[in-house]
View 1 (cartoon, each protein chain N blue to C red):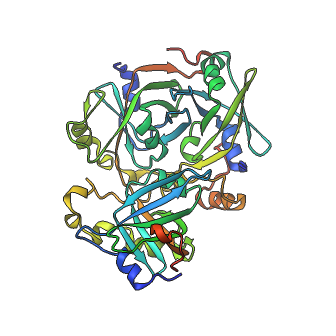
View 2 (cartoon, each protein chain N blue to C red):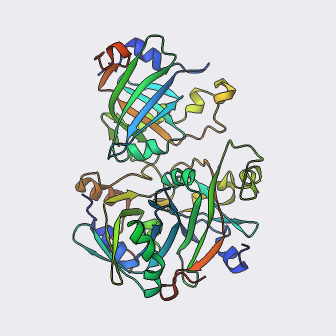
Length: 157
Length: 159
Length: 136
């Protein structure tokens, strides 16, 4: 689904520490994993992109079960969204024409394969700044549905 | 224990196809994971080092159960060795004096933290060359024992 | 056995958590709760709304395993992930934490902490972080 401008604007690259999200994935037998990320961007108003910097179990899960949920962790006032849909990772080394849910690996890697060019990590506070950045690729979530996590109406589309 | 010269030689073939080993680790509840590793070296006669480029389950396992086994995969040439000992991953960002079984993180990373320098990608055969040499850290094993995996004498202590 | 440190407790109690649940085939649903109560060494209790109970009831019944990441700024500053079986007692979600992981970007990303001696977890925390809980 195409995301409304309000959501796109929040998830688009601005400053490195302006937004924190969680990406939740699950093993094929239902063991969840929840990974924080300081970095997100949006492609074609439909795909949420997250650099693969320190993902470990997230990738193990995506290798066997390609679905994920992005929730806004901070700041969440007025943005209590959970965005769910097919989720995969596009690693350096896959052929340019490899396609995930309609987007081409070559396009994604060319533009987001070196995230630091877009969002300099050096400006992050020291205690949360990675010492060395080794980006392996880009995690891609195609948003298929969006529900609110506002407690009283949690789950409402 | 100190590795013999023959062992060091078998584990330090840089360039031209190099040495391939298998690294086996296991989860805290005992699920093993075995992966082939291509970037192998020796640190201070007692440790085997491997570039951490793609470790996933290996990392999960080592971070909950820091022990491993390294077996020679290629070229074997009669060197049917299995090395076992405490194993971890060292990475930039650790305190400089961080120590793992006598190995100081900074010294290990200074020597092996940038594999691409030791072994330029151009020296790696194209069919097994990683698309990008993105190294995250160094997997390091303090070798505590070595046994044979040759079928007829499997388990026999070598060192 | 997993034992939560005072810092972990403070962040969970102060800012709650994002709680990942899944069907037994692995289809995830996340709810977010803004506060939590930690009891004993490793029991975390979340008070849910009716809508939240409705949303995850089926998942918890068929697959009690959940993953928890601290809420708000805790997502980065309290870089932990807690896992374990959960059950619903009325509107209270009771999680027995059996695994604790570090999610701090860097060398310790994915480090399992509950298998380390408690003293070294405390030492790890005090050398990596200056706070003992969320800002007041």
